[in-house]
Length: 361
Image 1 (cartoon, rainbow, N blue to C red):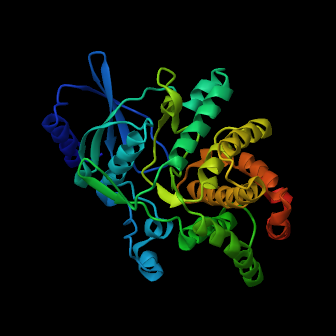
Image 2: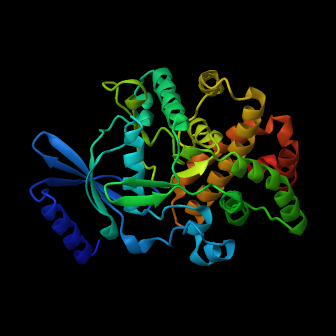
Image 3: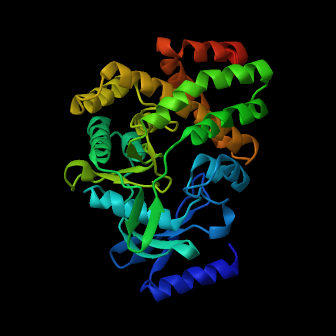
């Protein structure tokens, strides 16, 4: 870290009453953010650092497809580019729904800095690894999604002076998502996609994307899985689920976050747990056509899994992060489950032809 950035962080902390804290670096993730835990006596806080200049621009609400392509990947995919004002606005909205996002205690969005409530270390993934019964945790996660999906979704989220548009996870963003696989899988495995393969790929995905955009009706966390959920059993109802890493939120099909939760790249969600979670969700929403919803879940779930396969291939081959290869076999297992839906027969056949089983590892 540059001395200039460190000086800006120290000045921010001093200006907001945190100049006397002890700072403890925390482990990073696949993003360009970094975090520290701040200690003052028995109290702790989280310090978020997102340097503003290290990401390509986010998507302006009225940008054309051509303009989004010129701006880069974040605009194409409708990602927030790590913007702190996106985090602040999304956190404010989630907390206003009675959910548990970290409260923002101080923020300088233009500088990419914020001090947040510390929700603790009881990540779902760590608790389950240590032997905690996963059933109440996943029940809570489903209840959190139900609360989100029941809430009206404004076009613009606002909180404490920060505003952020809740853009639709639209056709172009969904196409960008599945085409990451096409771009990066050949660099990761010995496969190639000719013009016929690419034409067939687009034909298969076009109606799935259309369905995803047409039914984009709910706030979508977009990274809703066991590494981003914290168990808060002292709270009540859906507030027992602490939510992290939601700044990339969009308006999306409700199946998307279910796929993020149940097709978790970093831990295996059993078929039994997946079925129990889907049943809990659908019983709470009797207005949904179960068969149609599950078809959407399998189709958009397949798209999501394929997106993650592409991202992990990119992390391994471009970014030199080989540990992400360890998660890839689990994703292929999830994809095979989605392929069992007869409606995805054409997609399964495409993979059987161009990415044979021996390459799915």
